[in-house]
Image (cartoon, rainbow, N blue to C red):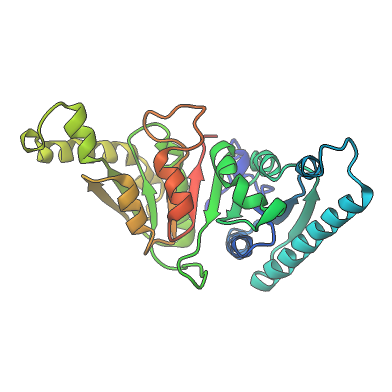
Amino acid sequence: MNAPQRDNPHQLASAPVVVGVDGSDGSHLAVRWAAEVAAQRGRRLLIVHGLDLLATQSLLGGYHVIPTSVVETVRARGVKIVTAAYGLAHDVAPEVEVATEVSDANPARLLIDLSKSAYLVALGATGSAGIFAHLGSTLLAVTSHGHGSVVVVRPTDAERQIRHDGPVVVGIDGSLVSESAIAAAFAEASDRETKLIALHSWSEWHFGEFAGQAGSHIDWHGLEIAEDAVLAERLAGWTEKYPDVHVTRKVYRTSPVDRLTEWSKSAQLIVVGSRGRGGFTGLLLGSTSSFLVQHALCPVMVTHSV
C-alpha cells in the first residue's frame, strides 16, 4: 500500500471511501466494491443517500412547505436504504469502520462536495425508477464535476459480479489530463498487485481526414512509432516510482472507445481522465469516458486533477 501524500487531500489517512446509494441493484454492487476497497486500503467507509427534498417539492406542485408526512416518508425510506447498505458493507468487510449519512441535499451535489476530501467516490451504474432515481440521474454529473477519483461500479456480467482478477487498464491520450489517470492507475495496480496495461489509441479517420491524405499514402508505421513515443513520454518516471508494477504498453490505430471496451471484458478496473485531448472545461465528459461509464463491463474510474 502506498503511503499517504500530505499535499493531496484524497490521500490523507482520514480520507474515507464514499459510496452513494439509492437502494437499486447497481448501488448494492457499488457498496460491495467500496467495502472491499476500504478494507484493502485501511480506509473508513461512508455510505450516503441524498433525499433531494427540493425535487420532491417540485413534484408536489412547488409548495413552499413540503407536508411533514411526505418529508417523514422520504426520510424513512432514506434511512432504510442506508441501513440496508450498512448491513451489506458489514457482511463484505466486517473489520471496516462504516458510517452512514442521510442528507436533504441533491444527491449529485452531495457526492460532488464529499469528493473534495474523499479517498474516492463510488456509485452504481444504474438507479431505481421514479423520483428516487438518484444515482441513475446523477451519474454523469458526479463523474463530470467530481474531485479526485470517481468510480462507476459496473458489473462484469448478467449476474452482477465484481471481477477480482485481470489487469488495471489506463487510457492515455497524450494530453496533460492523462496525468491524473496515469497516477491513479499505477497506484491501483500496485495496491491490487496486478499488472498495468497502458493503452494509447487513435482513429484512422482522425489522421486520414485531418491530414488531408488518402489512407494509402499515410505512413502508418511512422505514426505508430511517433504515438508509441507519446505513450513512453507520458509513462516516464512512473515505472521508477512503482517498480512493483509490470507495465505493458499498447498502441492501437483504432478508436479508444472500441479498445477500452474490449479490454473491459477482462480488466478488473478501467482508468480514464475526465476529458480527453482538446476537451473544454464546460463539457460533461470526454466522449470516451462518457461511453465507458455507461457501457463498460467492469468498474470505471474517472480521474480529475487535484
